[in-house]
Structures are given as C-alpha cells and as structure tokens.
Image (cartoon, one colour):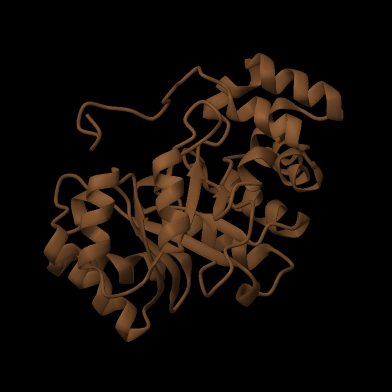
Amino acid sequence: MPDATLPAPGLGTYENTDPETCRASVRIALDCGYRHVDTAELYENEAAVGAGLDAADVDREEVFVATKLDSRNLGYDAVRDHALGCCDRLGVDTLDLLYVHWPIRTYDPEGTLAAFDELHDEGLVRHVGLSNFTPDLLADALDRLDAPLFAHQVECHPLLPQEELRATAREDDHYLVAYSPLAKGEVLDVPELVDVAAKHDATPAQVSLAWLDGKENVVPIPKAATPAHIRENYAALDLELDDEDVRRIDAIERRKRVVDFDAAPWN
C-alpha cells in the first residue's frame, strides 16, 4: 500500500454547494467517524468544507482533506496560484492531496505535472493525485511525474468496475479513489445488489460501498449531505460480504457510466 493511509470511506461533496448544508455535512461526517473529505475548486464549496473542519470535534491533523484543481487552471504558471487559493479557502497551510481534476482544457502533461512535482518538493502538497485519466493518459503521467502518484480518482462501482485502472493501482501501489460509488442511485435497483442486501439486512448502497472497500487499494467517496445518508454510508464499513456475494457482484455484466460528456478524455 502507499506510504500513507487514505481513510475509507471518504465524504464526497460534489454538488453540495449550499454553504450551511456543506458545513453541516462535513461536521456530521467527521463527528460520526469519517476522516477523509473530498472537494474541488470546481465545486465552489472549499470554504464551507473548511468551516466544517473547524466546526467538528476532531483535530484537524486527524483529517485527510483532498481537493482538485479545475481543468481551466492547469497551466504551469497557474497551478501554484490556484493551489494557494485552495489552501486559503480550506483554511490550511498544506494540502494533504491535490488532484488534477480532468486532463482536458489547459492540461499540459509536461507543464502541469512539473508544477505538481514542484509543489510536492516544496511541501505545499503532501500527496499528488490525478483524476479521470484514461489508462493511456495515466501511463504517460506516471512516466512524467517525479513525485509518487498517491491516488487516481475515477467513477467506479459495480456497473463500472474499472478493472484495468484498479490493476494499475495495485501494480503502481497507489489508491484508486472511487467517486459516484452508488452510480447516482443506479445501484439501488441492481437485482444482485438488492438480493445481497436482503441477505445481510443492509441496503444496496451499503453493499456497493462494501464491495468497493473490499477491493485492494480502493477507497470509495460517496457523496452525502443528509445525516441519514452520511451515517448509512459510514455503516457500510461494518458489512462483511462473503466470497459468494463478491463473486456474484463481480459477475454483473450490465455497464453504466453516469459521469460523461463529449469532452471527457475517454470520448
């Protein structure tokens, strides 16, 4: 495993843009046991996430906070300024994990990754991450980066299991961080997950999260804003799937990508 631990599950905050709701969700999540919070410049909620960190009854040093630079801000000269902006909004001096959010628009493999290496060398960024890279783009980035890649964040769930990228994470010894681990609710109606959930007196959402958590080097980051969903997702840690459950979920043939657009790197 990587030389630092990325706590699972993480709290996803995409589309959690109301400042008070976001602040409260981060506080509630940390108070119930989460120790990993994921945000991004694009989400426009970093200040609210920082307020939630301050409001929780948890030492800041115990929480792993990840953010991402918008794809409009990935030029060599822009990376530092925007990383400092992330620090200011989050209220931190050092970023635990900074991702390239999307390898599109201003992403330049040479300049962007060189700037990330410099931030890592200077200690402004403890860990370097990438997000939404295809296998070919990921291989190229791994060849260019001097800093060890700590995490690659992609959509991942039983309907999009990402076998190739998970294999690369194991081989390169970085985390695959699974966003949209519930496929925006699509997993709730998958018959195999419904059946496994009934067997364990759990919910299909918890089954999807437990399946991901059981995969080597994988950390799910379910998005949740309500106290009930935050706690339901965290309780998936206590769900133990047996080998039969895992084989049944692994064998699902249906495929669904829920985050997609024309400019996405795989299109």
